Image (cartoon, rainbow, N blue to C red; front, side, top):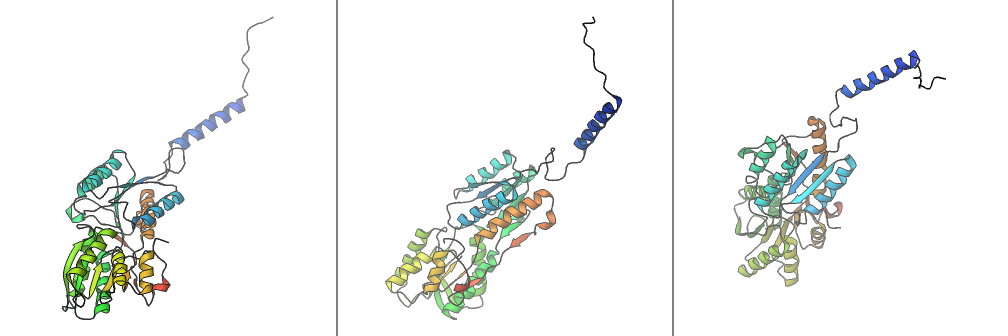
Length: 334
C-alpha cells in the first residue's frame, strides 16, 4: 500500500478562472484612484483645521456649532482651536495644523498682516488656506483661496446710514470699536467714515476699543455719558453687539437723548430693537459663515474648485430697525 500523499489534480477550467480573477483584481488595484477616495475605494475623510483668534467671543458660538454639524454631514473632520486673542498663539495653532498635515486650514485672524508668516508656511506645505469671518492681508504675501464672511466695509456703511436716519444731519457721536487691527474693525470704520463724509454735521467726538467685550463696552458707554451731559451727545455707535448692554443701562438712567446703533443681531439686540432701546443694527449671521466655510473646503479638496466663489464669498447684510425686526429671527442667543 502506497503511504505517500497524493496531490489532487485541479481541473483545467478551475485554473483558468482563478488566474482570470487574480488578473481582474490586480488591474483594479492598479487603476487610477478618484479624487477624494482612498486606495481601497472608500471616501477619504478630509481633515480641516480652523484657527479662530478667540473662540470665547459669543459671536463664534453658532459659527462653531454650524461648522461641526456641516462637517459631520459631509463626512469631514474639523478641529477648531482658539488663538486666545494672541497673535503668537494664532500663528502657533496654524503651524500645528501644518505639522500635523491637515488637508485644509481655515483662519479667522486678529491681525490680517501678522498672520501671513503662518499662511506662507501652509502655502509652502501645499496646504490650501481659506479665511473665515476675518480677513488676511493678501497684499502682504501668502495665498488665500477665498474669504468666507461679510463685506465689513459695507457693514460699516450700513451703520453710517442708520446713524444718519437716527440723528439727522448734525450731532456728536461716541464710537465703540471691536478689537483694534482686526479686518472687521478696520473696514467697518472705513465704511462708516465714508458715509459721514457726506454728512459733515455729524462728528465722531470720542472713540475707544471694547475688543468685542460686553463689560468693556458698558464701561466705555458710561465714560462717554459722564463726559458728555444731556444734550451734548446724539448717538453711540458700537461696531458689534456689545453696545446693547450700555444701551439698556442708559435707558434705565433716563438718558433717552442718546440713540444707539449696534452691529450683529443676537437675541438681546433683537429685543432691544423691539423695545426701542436700540435704534438699529446690521445683521451678520455667523451660522451660514460656518456652514459655507466647511462646504467650500470640502468642494475644494474634492477638486471641485469652480464651486468655490473667489476671491470672496460674501453674505447678505440686512439692516434691522423697529420697522422690520419682526421679520428676522435672532442670529444667535435663542
